[in-house]
Image (tube, rainbow, N blue to C red; front, side, top):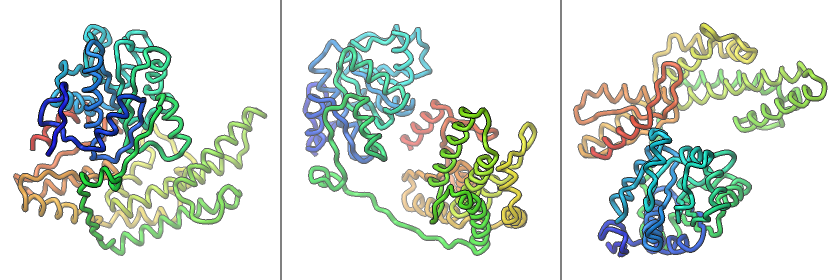
Length: 427
């Protein structure tokens, strides 16, 4: 394996991939947006560009921005391990503002969350003019009022440091991509996929195996009942000419809800009141959304997840019955679902299959590491419980979720997340 030879890169640590070299060379000379799929080397490109700017501007600093503390810690480790550079300075919300000002002493590689830098810039306490390069990781966030926008604007108005922006997904529309481009002051676009001629030799692909599982008849029947409940609310919206013919999915219903609320706001601004008929539409739309979520849970997560969701919908102390809750929970088919759930103990078969796959993998290779992704926290908890029931000392499941706490559902702080990732890397 050929490795990068550069006075600021530690020998033997960074593979010299041709496409990374070409992209880095372009990014050194132009403000560049790099779009690469996850896993083929955005960080390696950033390290090459940082190394060159440390060589070209030895008295100036480099700013490496990432949206979360775990990513900041990860990038700081990559810089420390790969480059001949001052010990990276990590700036997150855990570092007090008065302490941050003391720590900023160029030349440095500063790895930070954008919220910290944005706040300090707003108070004129961040010396942006001491930086020769700014790296924006997950650059697709540079829209609206996200701090990346203010930081990039301050750079364009002031020091005009070189900008390297990186993302795996620039946005779902041309408008959003143009917004990111304009906000960051991009001059050049470098885009590759796994099949690009200069990438393909380095990309060995990911083996994907689809494992189908039969959905029990009882679960299928609950899904039929919930579809009927959703259809009742959809019919209400159709009779009001708010929905076109055809399937009414989540996105269409969200658009209807936004449109109705705009109409209500317009009526209020013109006459000081609003139409009761529009609130009927709001109720139907919200009830339909609840029904769609319940349907998704029973089809993809299982009986327990649906049961817990429906239980959470019932107002407890301090909560009131809304019209949409009454429409949803009072629907005869939803009431039938609740009755059937009371005696159902069957679980979604994918849960047992997941545990089986994890168990077999770790029996074949006890040193293997496994990540199981789930869309919902309730399912994360169920998977952890089921894996723990294996009572296998080599199988040690850990719950890893985001920071937000919802009632009794405790999130993990960024520090806790970072500790878990370190433990995972260490085996």
